[in-house]
Image 1: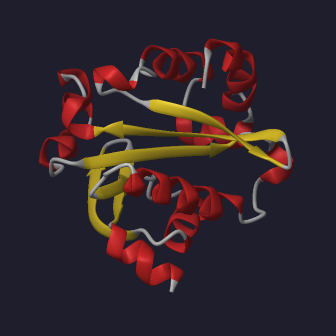
Image 2: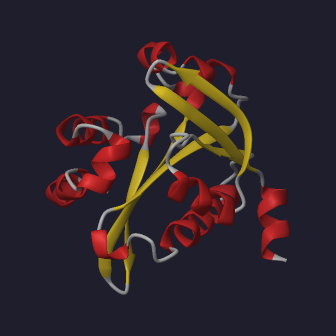
Length: 169
């Protein structure tokens, strides 16, 4: 992900399906662009191409290096074990949603992160996002906790190298 991808990402973030789960497109783009430096412990994002066409965005982030603002908004982040990376994904092209790409992309990205030394991955879908939860389950993630507030619920799911290996066997 580079600054040259910002127009594409803004278009994706502005689609109704993505906006429903990610929120305001301009705000989310600003967060992504300002958190993309892995050297600061923030998000490390990628544009995913399928058949040589930009199709999705995926990022990883170290929950133990997020600033206090995030811990205040999402108190469960304070309890994430060291060495855990979080993942976020969106399928940006509307005609590619519902084709099973989410699980495939997440599984490949998880393998990359484990190969680079991650010990545990987690993802935190909205409790109402059944399509995402299905994709994450397909990729090997399993629920381990739930958090609820006035805005709704978050399902915490995780994946370890041994779970991914068992899935691939």
